[in-house]
Length: 253
Image (cartoon, rainbow, N blue to C red):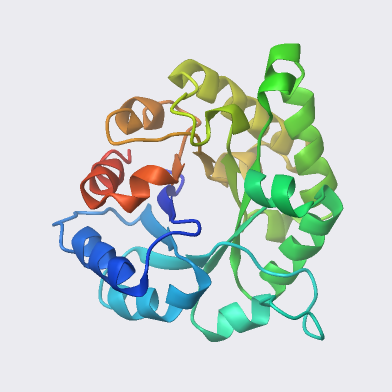
């Protein structure tokens, strides 16, 4: 069984006290996670240490950053490096989220640099890809996401691509209340796995978790996660509600 992952992306939300309360609420539920099931909490930078302290002793819970910079160190005021994250005990980092691409101009090339640095520091990248509504309506979404993977990831050797988690996020379904149907999610996840297989072979492609990210909720997680190539979710708004996120964790297959 591939890793099945419920990843929370809190984005730029919550005060320190609210973050602590939410972590306590999420962690108090009596989960019975299997060895291949993981919960990843991508909290804002100021709360990374807090989250690490809170999850201590909770098996299969991990902390993620929401971004890192593409340089090792230097005069880049306001940025955080992969090495800094690793020194905090952070294990995962989200790279290429659609909001980073749209608002901060992150390119496929830049994300390739970030991915290599993250891997060199022992972090597991959660690499995001996905198309806008315009691209979906034009019917070119498969080529678009294939290009995102090729230009950012396909310079990696096999031993490194095995350490990547992919998150497919249809941009038209993020924060809009719209969700791709389970069939649409499966169709794209299957395509992504075939793209990986063409470059690295079937065995490698079958190992790589591919998460769905686009208005995942407690009410639709089970149906989405039941699809054969959907290995969990990258969850935004619902991850800020403990009861909802707990249901999403319980929906992992």
